Image 1 (cartoon, rainbow, N blue to C red):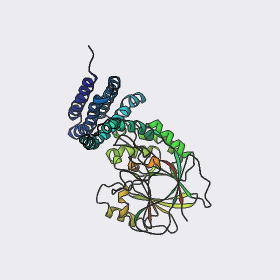
Image 2 (cartoon, rainbow, N blue to C red):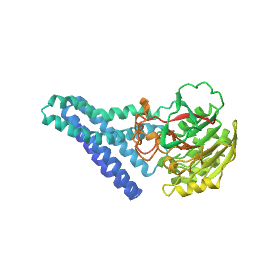
Image 3 (cartoon, rainbow, N blue to C red):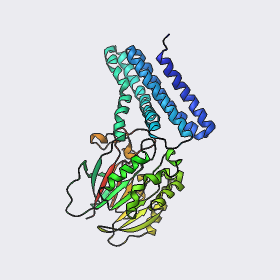
Image 4 (cartoon, rainbow, N blue to C red):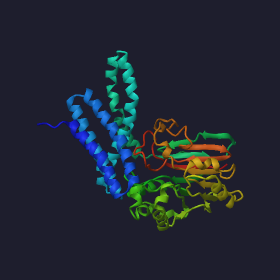
Length: 425
């Protein structure tokens, strides 16, 4: 007697949706259990609706294969969340067989829930108008979120070196606005007439399923090959898995030890979840961690003043103004501010930072950057998403992030591996 593939899929999703949060509640507590239940419920509901839609039109073989794929994804997502109850960095086999497929399934099915909700009234209107052929032609749209998720795996793992020319000084802006920059990908552009300050910014690497220790080491080795004048690390180095794996960040940062005198770092929001681990990692590599502090360092173009602001979630204006006032400008010395969350840039008094370097937003993470457009889901929010911005005479550069965390895919917004060339005249 054959087993109905729909029954298998629905049973696995139901067990996953109920058992994983209950187990998490018992082993890790209410907050994580609620987080797991919400994340899994949203994605599994989207998968369930998609499977019902496929059952209505797909040939039996295709439907069976789709059910098997969805069942495997649901099981992988459940195992991934179970592993987070006792989180730690896992080996390559676990990451590639469980964590990454599970997270791709969660992202695809999460998108599918809203996608199917949006398609429902369109189908209803077309059906009411007697346009059954149009409704039938739309059936392939049921698969769109899953196709997009599979394509986005390449966006999420692919990293291309790019050179970014940033004009630091220019005409004051009347308000907050995005400025154009010159980006050159895959090849080093001709040297400008005047030597720029060459910076490698590392932001939001988030050691975890998508960023292993070895992958982080290779990333740093690639960037250091271009001999930057400064390496500036603007926060969010870990995930839940990274937090619980002692020494992982120190190993990941190993390539920086050879150039430690050029490296400076700040805390991001997630770093406060494992502050001692982050501090010990930087200490192990002799990297200066700036917690509301300044440093003046020598570079090939002369001294540069760097101020590192600690992350604060709210009430940021006064601490930021106090920090900048406590460390006044040095005459004829470029002044950089490291500020993890770019939404705090609006509190930087005019003229108090030539360039602020931020991360935090992962470039918006969902958008059209891969297609050459600046638009992302954060474009109309309080968070500057990526690229260069101006407010008065101040300039802000928001890095798209070396890795990502949270929503488990980059969709149309690739990670950033950039050499920033600051034009200081």
